[in-house]
Amino acid sequence: MSPAFHARRTPGKPALIMGTSGETVTFAELEDRSVRFARALRARGLRAGDHIAILMENNRAYLEVAWAAQRSGLYYTAINSHLRPGEVQYVLDDCGAVALIAGAAMADVVESLDLSRIPVRVGDLAGFEPYEDVLAAETGEPLADECEGREMLYSSGTTGRPKGVRKPLPRTPLGDPSAAPVQIVEGMLRHGTDPGCVYLSPAPLYHGAPLVFSMSMHRIGGTVVVMEGFDARQCLRLIEKHRVTHAQFVPTMFIRMLRLPREERESFDLSSLRHVTHAAAPCPVPVKREMLDWWGPIIDEYYSGTEDVGSTMITAREWLAHPGSVGRPMQECHIVGENGEELPAGQPGVVYFAGGRPFEYHNDPVKTASVATDKGWRTLGDIGYLDGNGYLYLTDRVAHMIISGGVNIYPQETENVLIAHPAVADVAVIGVPDEEMGEAVKAVVQPSPDAGPGPELAAELVAYCRAELASYKCPRTVDFTDELPRDPNGKLYKRRLRERYPGTAG
Image (cartoon, rainbow, N blue to C red; front, top):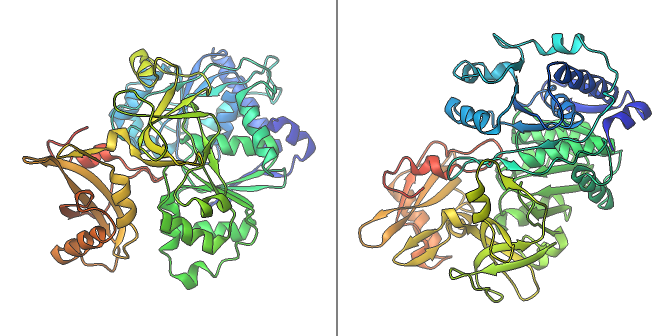
């Protein structure tokens, strides 16, 4: 349950392959280099329970650094490499990192930071210790007191300041079965994952799922193929080239692959794929159907969050019988109305779970308390409903809800309709100020390359939406943009989008 085991058993097997450069790190090298960096951190005064921050693009060192922290009993915060300097500074100050490991691609951001409270700085940047020099100065002898560390990741900040999700440190020996990371791996093994797996990680490693899944694959002994950035064609090319067996995507990536010409996307040999998962956002039903028609019933879905308060899972075959569902809850689940009452099947409300793992929002006890009821149920802030068979359907996030004329409107429902139009490459729906209704529904559309934005297309999209949904859910106005503010993992920064429209909420 750690790279050390596989370094002894299959030392020359690739643990990591970079998608574009082809750089390869074997299990023996991953073990050696992560041990050396763990020793370097210890030599610079870091002890179990201390905190480091990682600010890097997807590169070969990323998982070496993460494993060094994991085996040293440290907290490690992977920072979104697309944040602005002020946003990075906030995370660094809030998490209390005493070490920063930064990539050369982050030079412009780093030069604007105040690092006076961070004594340990490693990376190929001015004022930092070069990473390779730091490794060369250490031995590959593991620490005598290796113990499990823990990631402390920050929310994406799509609606406000990001918050660190802090969970208790395991403080157990590396690979101990009681540690949460090992329990995750044991669950993966029960679902058919094995040392022969080749896992494609197409998303930024600063996100929770790509980071945790990649490290979990290393515990199993599988090879991880990391894309430096997502490109639909390259993704298919890498699956064919490396005979990828497992992968995890977000719906935006599905949409981008489906937008490739059919003859091109079907020219790749994807027969090695055994199991694909997707998460992070609900997938529009037409998109999921197209993917299942293309790849077959191998695409499962889960719903969860960094906070680990609860989760659901649905297989491809289950989804075909319950289209649009994210599955049955794996913990006790409750749908709660505006007045705190529990709602019956079919009625949407805030989704709460009973159980889950303990966590707190770092430095924010008020927010920690705000996500829990007096019964101890906790929420990720999503709205949804349970059907009569106990399947959960998500309708949107509480923070994204539009209130127009006193009626609650869930933008996700409208977005799911509009994204199916061939002239729409991407879309976001928000509420904008309206004197009569309080808020009015507006669609902001990134048109497809061959579509002509303008009044005619706007009218066509409104009519298209009204053919599928009640008129009050449809946009009153449509704006066009060259690109929506998404991070590379597909998450939409609605906060940044709203900044373009003065007076909008949040």
